[in-house]
Image (cartoon, rainbow, N blue to C red):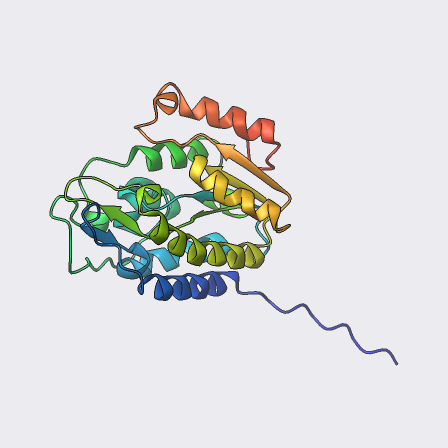
Amino acid sequence: MMNAPVPPVYVDRASQVLRIEHNMCSQLEHLSFISEKVTHVYNPLQYAAEPHANYVRLCLGHGGPVPVLFLGMNPSVGMCQTGVPFGEIAAVRDWMGVSGEVVPPENQNPHRPITGFSYTGKPEVSGSRFWRFWQSRVATANDVFEQAYVHNFCPLAFMSSSRNVPLNKLSLPLRRELEAICWQALVDIIMVLGARTVIGIGRYAQQQASKLIDAGLVDQVHYLLHPSGLNRQANKGWDGEAFEQLTQAGVPLPFPQ
């Protein structure tokens, strides 16, 4: 008599991704970023851990592999407040239905206070553009998350007293240490997701993603124009440009018929 087939083991991808991020953050804590350039460092994966975890569980709750990973560089205003990549408040709270407690860090930048979902400052242009692109094309956020996951290469936001400091403006030795830690986390997350296509949002993210091709970990890497309000090309019509770039890349995402 033949043995009954063994049922597949359920893979809790959300818990695995959160564990990988926790290990990444623990390693980054050993690096010192404060300098003449950088006066404050925010880690929303820690002080906004609850909404961030709720976002990860929402995205990966269906249990299946995720074909496409959208890769950003590091947090801006939206994620600093909500813990969600490109986390414009209305998109996170009202469209995704993600919420949770945000406990402001002790050493806050007085020009960039953390108020979580009570934030009433200027909306993040990048987040508004990115998530509204999907809202105009699908019925629910789950229609996106069944096929794609959005993740930032680095979980930290760097600031001077009055402005953001781009990750690629850190000193080269420090950046290399940071990138090695974040790169390993990215590799581990790719393996958990089962993603075969990566879309780099902006040139820095594309460059990091291209290393996955070199390592034989994914099949395709494509570039997506960054939706930043500081990007002149994006200000000329990011929605249309993004649609064209993704369509030409043959990305199997939920576009309208």
